[in-house]
Image 1 (cartoon, rainbow, N blue to C red):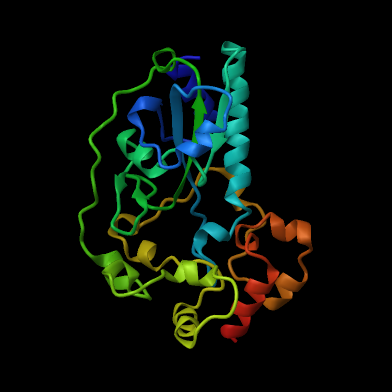
Image 2 (image 1 turned 90 degrees about the vertical axis):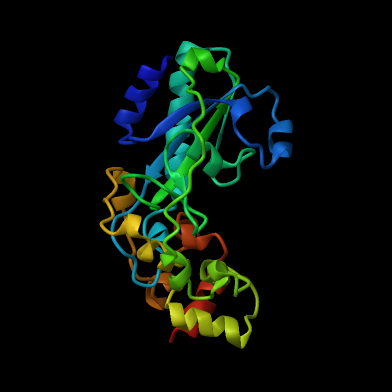
Amino acid sequence: MSKELIKKFFGKEKIEYFAVLDYRSVRESAPEIMERESFTPRSVIVFLMPYYTGEGINLSSYAVSLDYHIALRGVCRRLAEALATAYPNMHARAYGDHSPIDERHAAVIGGLGVFGDSGLIINEKYGTYVFIGDLVTDIDPSALGAMEPTEPRGCIHCGACEAACPTGVLRGSGEDCLSALTQKKGALTEREESYIRLGGYVFGCDECQRACPYNRAPKMTPVPFFYRERIPALSREILDGMGREELSRRAFGWRGRRLLERNLEILK
C-alpha cells in the first residue's frame, strides 16, 4: 500500500493531513506501551482529524460532539484493514491520546502543524481544532513512502493564549488549567470553584483557542461524525436524561456523572 493509496484512503475519510514516518524518527514518550506489544515498530502513520462544528456554550468545542475516540478508533481500524490487504502478515496498533510516542512531535515533524504556546499543535487550515491519531506498524517505512522528518517549528509567540488563560497557568502564575479543574474529581477549593464560575465551563476550556490568531476564522470539519448528536450546552435536565451507555459515548462522560453534577451546581 503506497503513499498514494494511503492518500486515497484518507480522502475517503475526509482527512486532509497525514504523514508516514520512520518509527526511528519519532520521539517515544511512553516506551513501556510499545514494549507490551508483540511486534517491533518500524513505521508510523500520523493524521489530523479536524473537529470544529461551532462554539460550545458551557462545553469545550471538542466535547460538543460524540466522543472523538470513537471516530479515531474507526479510522485506525479501517486503515489497518486496508493495510492488511497489501501486507497480510503485518502487525499494527492504533493510538490516540495514550500513545507510546509524542503525538504532537510526530505531527510537527510530519509537517502537519507547528507547536503552539498553548501546548496544542496548530494546523495551517484548521488551527488548533484537531485531534491526532497514529497507527504504528511493523511495515518497512520505505514501502509506505515514509517522508524525511521536517525541522520542528513553533507558532508566532504573540502571547494571546497566555493572556486569555483564566487560571494563569500559561503565564506561569497558576497550577492547573481550567480544563483540568473541570475534570478534577473530589472536592474543589473555593479558588478552584471560582475559576470554574469565571470560565463558565461544565467541562473543558477553549479560552486559549478562542484567543489564538490562527483560529480567527476556524474552518468547519468535513468529517460527518462530529455533526451527529451535538450538545453545545449541558444542563442538569439533559444529563439526568442520559443513561450510562449514552454518557459513555461522550467525551465529557469519562470522569463520571457526579463530577458533571458538581460542576453544574457550581455554575448555578
